[in-house]
Amino acid sequence: MEDFSLRVCAIIRDIPQGRVCTYGRIAAMAGSSRGARQVSRLLYSSSRKRGLPWHRVVNAAGGISLGGESGELQRALLESEGVGFSKDGKVILSSFLWNP
DNA sequence: GCCATGGCTAGTA
DNA sequence: GCCATGGCTAGTA
Image 1 (cartoon, rainbow, N blue to C red):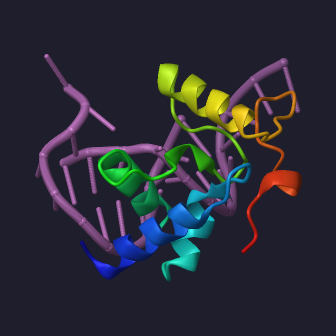
Image 2 (cartoon, protein in one colour):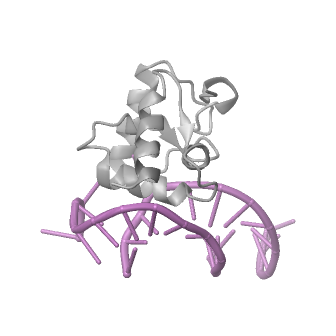
Image 3 (cartoon, rainbow, N blue to C red):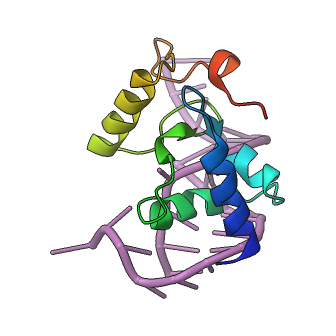
């Protein structure tokens, strides 16, 4: 696994309970400001085997990008940690975005 | 080639 | 809706 991916994994592990981060911000923190899509790809391929808190990553608008049951699970997990959603189904980033 | 993005814009109402 | 983006690898047909 490459340095960029290792940094992305470490950053995702650091997201505390009850907070979320975005694909783009994680990519920027890992040193690739336009690498948001790689973050999504890494989550897709490695979140299970690496035990990452994948549910704490949302898109730039605070929305859940997964479809179907996975998306519903993600929202349920976040709500169980106390993350608040607005009426349009997006995480209230002004309150719950992780700012390290 | 793949992708769980992001940002901008055309085309409607 | 469209498409530039970029690190990684066949994952979740």
